[in-house]
Image 1 (cartoon, rainbow, N blue to C red):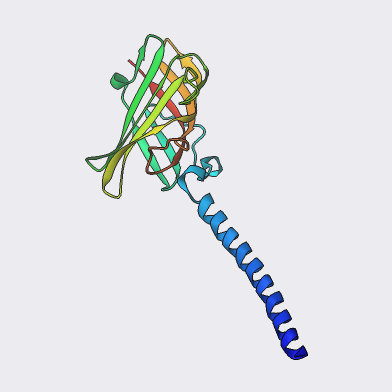
Image 2 (image 1 turned 135 degrees about the vertical axis):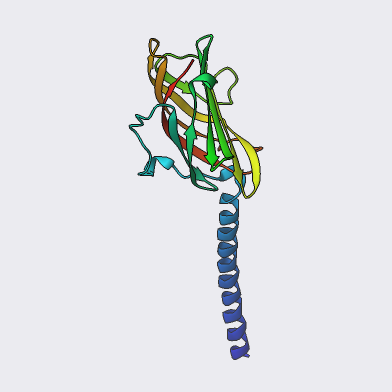
Length: 193
C-alpha cells in the first residue's frame, strides 16, 4: 500500500513537471511562429552592407542595395530627359537592364528639390514628403513594390548644371499588401532636363 502511494505520488509529480515542461515548450513554439508572421517581420538593415557606394560620382548611374525577403543589387541607369524638376518637385526614373531585356525600374519623387531629407511615410496623413517605388522581376513575376517608410535625402542641388546628389534609405516594412518586404539603400547623382 505504501509502495502504491509512493508510485502515485512520484507519477503525479512527474506529470506536473512534464505538463509544465510541455507548456513552456508549447509557449516557446508559439512565440517563434508569432515572431515569423508578416506583421512582425523585421527587415535586415542594408546599412551594414560594405558594398554600398557612398561616393557615387558616376552621373546618371547608381546602385540600389536591396535586403529583406530577397537580397539583390540593382544597377540603375537614367537619362537626363526622363528626370525632371516640375513645380520644385524632383522626379527621377531609372531602369535596370539584363542584356537587352528590362530587369527592373526605380522611381522616386521629392515634393521639393532643396537640400533636405524628405519622409517617405504613408501615415499619418499629411506627413508624406516623397515617394519611392521599384519594379522588379523575382521568380519570373514582375511586381511593383511601393516603399512607404524611410527617407530620400537631397544633399546638393546645382540649378545651373541641373544636377542633384543625394541618398535614399527606404523600406516597405509596414505595407500590409506587399508579398515581399525590402529595405532599399543607395546614393544617386543625376542630371535632369
